[in-house]
Length: 77
Image 1 (cartoon, rainbow, N blue to C red):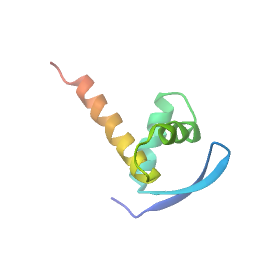
Image 2: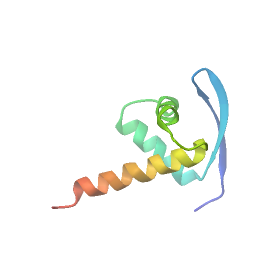
Image 3: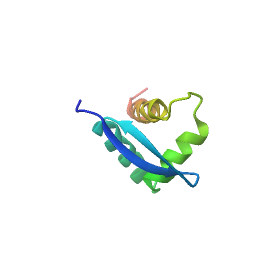
Image 4: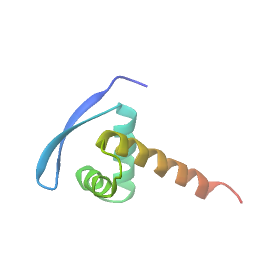
């Protein structure tokens, strides 16, 4: 993995910065494209449902869950 990339994003009308590895930003962009929503809307949705205090961790876990669920769905049962 590469170094951390910090980005500013607006969630519920306020700006915050989030630090993630570029691969996780790529994963979030892929998820938002698949859901036909903006990256900001996806992050806001994840933020509204998170149980951890750390947004960066919640975003990483959301990307992990998305790809895990996608893999599970494509595995023959």
